[in-house]
Amino acid sequence: MNILLLDHYAGSPEMGMEFRPYYMAREWVKMGHNVRIVAGDYSHLRIKNPSIKKDFTTRKIDGIKYTWLITGDYEGNGVKRAFTMFRYTRKLWDNAKGLARAWKPDVVIASSTYPLDTYPAQKIAKFAGAKYIHEVHDMWPATLYEIGGMSKKHPFVVMLQAAENSAYKHCDQVVALLPDSKEYMVKHGLRPKKFHNIQNGILEEEWQDKLPLPDEHKQLFDSLTGKFVVLYMGGHALSNALDILIDAAKNEIDKNVAFVLVGDGVEKKKLMERVKNEQINNVYFLPPVKKTMVPSLVERADCSYMGALDSPLYRFGLCLNKMYDCMMAGKPVICAINAKNTLVEKYECGMMADPTDVNSINKCIHLIKAMPKQERNKMGMNGKNAVLENFTYKKLAEQFIRVIKQA
Image (cartoon, rainbow, N blue to C red; front, side, top):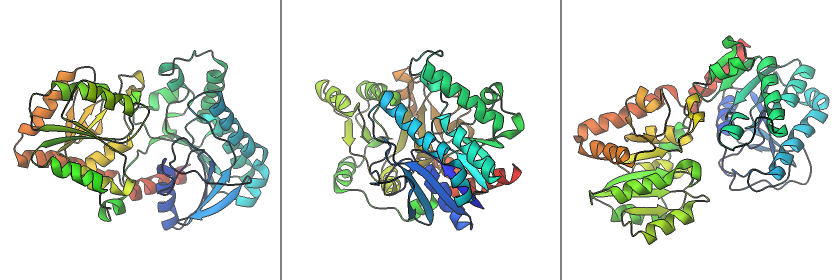
């Protein structure tokens, strides 16, 4: 098939986040499909953005055609970012007929964070006589009014809601990353049989050909030999609720427990200052590592930690990239997120903690630390086996192709 995937923020191993479009597309290419990803020239998620001088510049990355549109840069989530969304979707909309003729897609996948890309996706699919799949990463516009504090009557929210409803009404199938989002989508116009949950996962090669850690990271972990290491990896933002993890470290009475936070973000400096000012001596900060170093990172920990602010959005379920990495590491996972039916519970590969109760987090740490080694290893391996059986990108990509064929 000729697969056209529209994702404003799509990345690659060299550029950085987001990785899902690349992983899926690479597997589809291996299966013999022809894949084109259309992305914007700037994304806040990427470490490195492409430098292009004209729209529809195309480059091949690992067999995938990446086509870039000039959308402009931005900071934060203000008006400037909204204009980049309009530029991306408008350029595709205006050129839909020509693109359909030139690219001849058999299927068009709209996969940006925001639902506005449904309009050019529908138009291109119509001109090409192609199937249209709508893929949902995040629950926009619900995120904007439930987390961002915007009014449901705000013009931008109303515009996104109309786009979301249009996507559910006109798509051939929906692929949702969040496992419990079906009921919401049906309320907004989706026919129940069109819903499919395909989550994130891991790339087996990255775990087989892992890269060694930088010296700074090695030296710290070597200095913690003999201690029980609780690892957090990922963004240091308000949404990650790292202050309560710092509270747990401050509350920790066992001197043989160490907390290592690896990553970057707007809150990191403030968290580091807090640790210094309050003389919390069991917390250590490290810079982020490349994706291919994650396997080497997690194997140095005894358990991993995921946390988030208490939010109504988690009623739709969890699909955090780090969850699959933590499970694949074969180490117990502490999940301090107010969500139901998590993979941590389903596969018995860790413990759930109350994200509002520091003592709950400490209790989970103590229970895992006190486990006989064999029992702790079994808990960790439950997660690893679940990922290998259900959440490798090879299997996820095959599942996605089956959904396309059903359309």
